[in-house]
Image 1 (cartoon, rainbow, N blue to C red):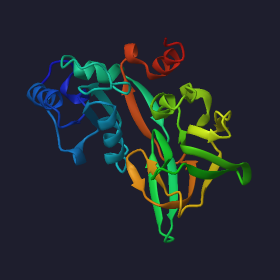
Image 2 (spheres, rainbow, N blue to C red; image 1 turned 180 degrees about the vertical axis):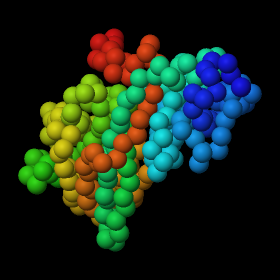
Image 3 (tube, rainbow, N blue to C red; image 1 turned 135 degrees about the vertical axis):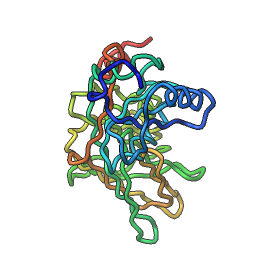
Length: 262
């Protein structure tokens, strides 16, 4: 038992890790240092890996709604704290919570089948062939773009705005801004359209035009639906997950600083 805190105050931890060697070594180390329980008995999840594994952990523990404290043992660690095995209970006690609400995707394919999935980062539509995608964009029941020809388009949350959205030259969104980023991916026509910022309550519908000739897939984080003809996206405020961050790894400050990165 760690002596960081009295036994009565110790939260029940479960530790999960990516399959990489650094993550597995950290898993073994934490199991030696701290009492750990099965996921079904846990109060807090400690996730060891990178941002991709953190997304997996968010989805895995969504039914339980457990807070997640990530430590960086992967390639990209924007959503993670620094890995330090010592004083874990003290760090957890002082950690700052960040509440995330996912996007809900409903995608309809060419056969009329519906695919539903949640995304904490973004929902993206991507062309499946050499042909550019041809898309119609509707926001809150109003057609805002009759035809977009591009490699695709994505709708990103504030947390997701620093991921694929940023690579697609979309804006970085401060966590408390209450907006989503709608960003085209390599737009061909209209060439000068750079996307839009939408209220977080907005309902977005994307229709795939000429879907037989220009097939498109839809991806919510890592869940993919192929050959879609329409996709509807909206934020689910009734679903939430909590990430925990050390004071010196404050996510809001980290997102804000990204706007000034050179």
